[in-house]
Image (cartoon, rainbow, N blue to C red; front, side, top):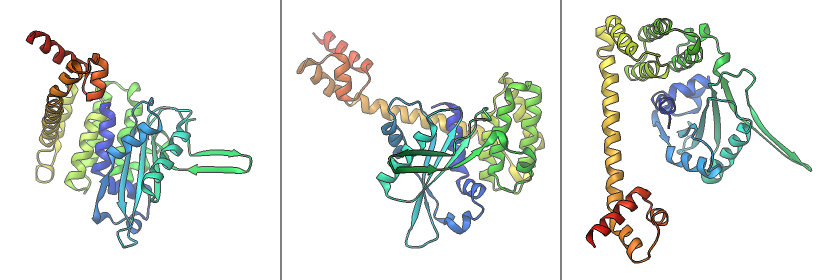
Length: 308
């Protein structure tokens, strides 16, 4: 997954209640925000693969959200972040819809964030008709390129700052590092002046810092230094340190995950040895059966040769 994709996934989870409020003015009357949300990332990844095994990875979220109807009623919110033109996008959205519905049999609302630079690309629905049989699947779309910075600046919703950051990213190619630094600092300063919660501010700040990259990475340090200089110590103490701590924790978790994966692979050494010695399977086939990398099979085979 690209780093930008992981940033979108993270900010959507950090601000999902505000995300719903941003797109639905009556969100608090529809959704029971106090019950929280369940992020079905693994399930959505499987649905995406089933829909098109050869397709590239996309930024998508499938979220279980409770409604205020009582009796534990819930719906599914399908979010897509689409960063380039795709002639088959509407069909892909429809495919996701029927696969999600087939699995859960629950109501679905879909929201598409279009982050591309093509003003002509604005898919809104999938249509199909043949011999009296007709279907139309319409979904919510939001074209970031068409949004007004002035309107977003006046918004009281934290998610508006995510959109402002995405708008800044669309201008990136026309900006020098100096101009970008000034704009990122202005955006961050405006954010810190808002009466948002500390978790929301930290999540958005992280998005601002990393989503729009400088050509010269040294400007990241300048950005951090400037933030520290005008951060009100009594309100948002240690925001830069918090961001750096978040990065460290991510690296640690990544290391742990890689360690767990490696441990599982090493635990299959005996299985691989049997596939090689008893069944005589070639490396690629043994790797497929044991669900391990081919390199691991080669390593096991080499160890068997040494024992001889």
